Image 1 (tube, rainbow, N blue to C red):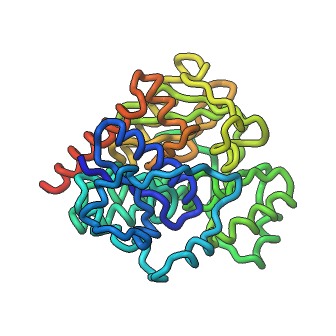
Image 2 (tube, rainbow, N blue to C red):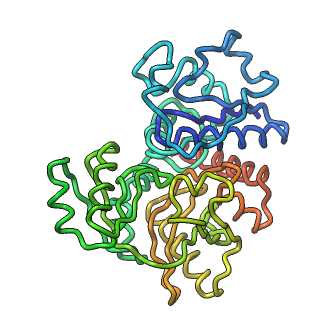
Length: 353
């Protein structure tokens, strides 16, 4: 099968995406697929051959990608693009995607998980993996997601605010602490902070301004960090995350050894059923499909507080969904094949309607 693994792009999770895409591409090639890794933003501007021949590339354009502790310098990425086009799709990307049997979306963050790429591919008739454009857009918006599911699952209290730099002082004075500060539409915990003091909240709000003028101020819940993957509507065994320091932020997520990950989670069976049921409920309410991963804090009495759901979970060497699938006797290549099979069935159904 000809498969484009689409990664990179132009989001704060660019490096995570390239690491995920590289792992996905290598695994698919090991199964005999003509898989190639394509950077959505940079495309084929340095490729000297014919685009018709890209699927014959001996290495599939795979490289050695790792995730640095620092977030990527997107201004430098923009400046490195030779054509300086305003398009989010680099040279030749759409042409090559149209030649593929399916595009495996390894994108993360804005313009990948927010439904825009999915909508473009729907219009162009290009099959892709994962949820469709509408449910992807909903899940990317933390405020909208909470509004849709809060009557059916337990979620921390929250409020969403738009603000300017001049309004930070007022926000600090009227916000109950401790709280969690989150950009409305970022992933991989980019820009997320836990504020215990007014000074910490002020600093967090200043950081979040670079991601837009809208943030979620969420009640801080103390408990165990539990995450649950889901494939085709069925929840997988949960995984517990125990960061060595702080909370499960960007650095702790993608640096090997920064957090202990235990799968299946060492929690009572009734707790496990609660988080799995909550995951499946959110998945259905938002209208998701194929696969996702939900994040929870579980309190000492076993109450699961739903935080958010990710429509394109990471597939880096330290990512969680592959570990959960393995606990369900599904190795990494088989997991990818299951995602592709489910996605092709879904896209075929969508075309008929």
